[in-house]
Image (cartoon, rainbow, N blue to C red):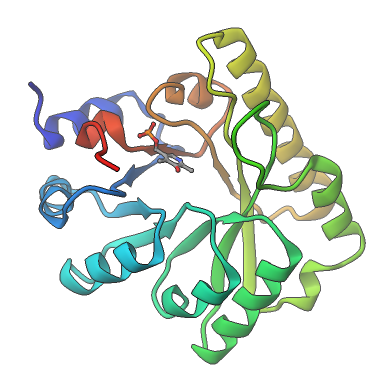
Length: 220
Ligand SMILES: *Cc1c(COP(=O)(O)O)cnc(C)c1O
């Protein structure tokens, strides 16, 4: 059995310098996060606002907490004071609320637009055309306290690697389009999880979100 530290090292050895590791610690105890922290890991991802608040209070203050789960607008206020990045922005209403809460905290919040690409599962996320529309209709300019840093995508949950690769490639090509046509400053393409991160990296991911490989199976 490899330790948490050894698993993190295994991944880091295989990531290009331009790809960051976000350790997904949802449903795992603070002691596991501390172990990863002691091994040098600073970026952690959580999917529930209350769980995140508890861990944030108890763990070292230089951890960068990323929110990756579906976020209800009435929960934004709880994470707005400290969250480093929200990966799961999937509606105009949510953008508006993040902007409002960021303003109250006198900060700017980094966000990613979540794309809906996978064939099944999540009903959340924007289509490519909806993202094009956000830029072309200047919606994002209405939210000055939201800084859109890029895109987050998930591939279909399938053993068909070719399918997964095609989905990541299409997200990456759309990311290039956004960079070239709309905003040259976007720099974050969040894609790749335990089962598909190697493919995601080959297709251009700049941030992989890995949970079970590092921390083991989750008990929901
Ligand atoms: C849980 C989760 C992950 C991590 O999944 P693993 O398969 O455990 O690596 C990554 N991204 C999102 C959005 C998640 O909800």
